[in-house]
Length: 153
Ligand code: CUA
Image (cartoon, rainbow, N blue to C red; front, side, top):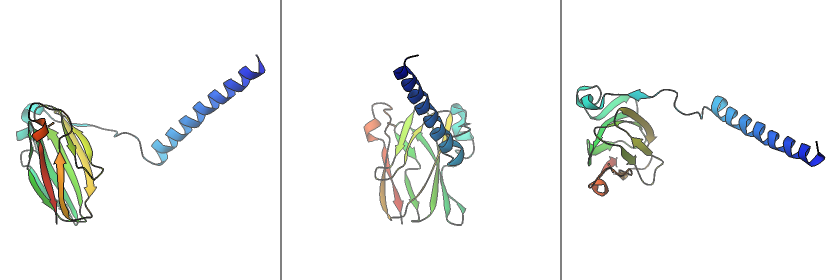
């Protein structure tokens, strides 16, 4: 083999090994891997299936709240949510018809909510105020009107 070929081979394989080591370290040591299990739901029976048979804000711990929410064209249910500042809020969501989005501009909350799947996302709102919730997945003619707010007190 030519000397330059040997150098190229060594560098290429070396880069591959370094990348694999970084990804492996992130996944196994830092826990940055993708979710290991997906929760599903029968999209025809959302309204009869717990917890979506009773959407709303629930206190689930000392300073912890769960917001159970269903998304459908073109609304978030419940629509006007209120949570205290500084509390950990977990949104548990599913879609009733087509794929919708759940984004709060100004925060790092940005999730895709699909029919048949349960989406969970947690956030702590440190600053009181009114936060806008928008759907960022095109879901039909009323898509641009699909929004609501969450009040943090
Ligand atoms: Cu829902 Cu766009």
